[in-house]
Amino acid sequence: MDLFEEARRIINQGEICDSCLGQIFADRGHGLTNRERGNAWRTIFAMENGEMVDREMDCWVCLGEAYRFDEWAELAIEEAEEIEFETYKIGTRMSPLLEENSKLLREVVGIPMDSGEFLKTEMNREVGKIIGDKTGKNFAAENPDVTILLDVSSRAVEIQVNPILIYGRYKKLIRGIPQTRWPCRRCKGSGRNAEGVCERCKGSGKQYEESVQELIDVSINEILEGNSSAFHGAGREDIDAKMLGTGRPFVVEIKNPKKRSADLQILENRINKMAVGKIEVELEGIVNRKMVSHIKELSASKTYTVGVKFEEVVEEEILRDALGILEGVEVEQETPTRVVHRRADKTRVRKVYSAKGKSMGGTGAELEIHGEKGLYIKELVSGDGGRTKPNLAELVKVGAMVETLDVISVVAEEGSFDVPEYIIRKK
Image 1 (cartoon, helix red, strand yellow):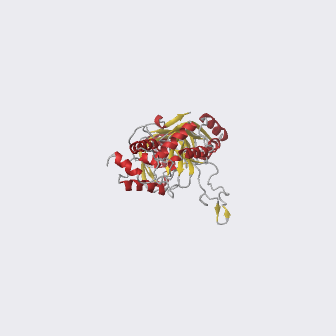
Image 2 (cartoon, one colour; image 1 turned 90 degrees about the vertical axis):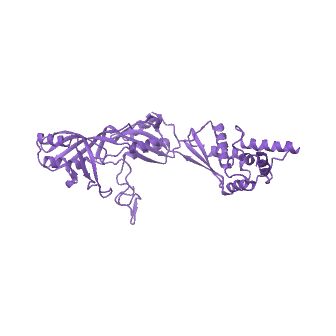
Image 3 (cartoon, helix red, strand yellow; image 1 turned 90 degrees about the horizontal axis):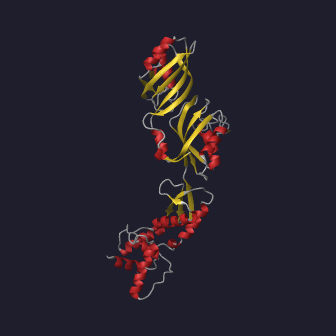
């Protein structure tokens, strides 16, 4: 069937608008809209027959939807009025009836189902153009600020606001707070039990009153008007450990933000002021989703300062010799007894890159240990009842335990946490 015969058959299927006619030939006539393609065909046949065909008709294929692009654009602009954005893309949830009509047209005419394009594609493109022209915003196929969803069945517009991902480093200056919000063990985060308000958490739903995540995102959510957040860290320190030195890389994900243009320096200053004495942050920039995977998957070694308490006095020379044995050794560690209730019980092999320290007089010592990602420091010192070998207690032949633990450096073993191509906007 040639193009002329194809176009004739389509026109002969009843009242079909120029857009639905033009959709079949969307891969021809570069630079034309579907409506212009359909108009061209109808003009050709009108010249051939000596009379023009009335174009003001009810189209049985799209039911007039192809002529409502301006209406959809206005609805979308109104719906997004209170949301700050610079980039967008359009999605359309087409009604089953209109999808079936488009397929039926191709079937009765006898042309392939993949001929041209469907109304859904045309709506995405044409409504998107109108929104861009009226608002001055830019279309973005990837990582847009918002996705505008047109629901034809309900004649409603839904705005999906994509999260803002902020990359930075944090220091935790005090002990006793977790990295992320920790649901109450007793009520599982609900704040209630069978008797009413949970006595353990007093209705908060949290095991710990504060977390690094909450101290960071309470200020950001207030300014960006987000409704929730997720926190992605390059590993995590124990609750009773500080995070000092160069800080720990993280990405905080602010969900459904109404504002996007806040100055990161202002956010940083606000967080540090609100959480003074507890945490400090340095915000680096706005990043894309790939940065989350990058910081979570990239292996990072850690350096710790460790305050140790021995059961008896350990001579300086014995301590020094024991640390010399640990330096460079590969340690076999079974899952620590303190966490085995929530982690798989298996043996891990981790390397101690360096181990040095000094006696603090009496039964105390201060160590600095640099280890591979996943090395359990507390168990490296105590031995955990023989579940970590070798260990410091075993080597000095005196029981030992960690009294204080501070992380002072988190360094990527391969590559870098800061990847330029993942950064959308630097501070």
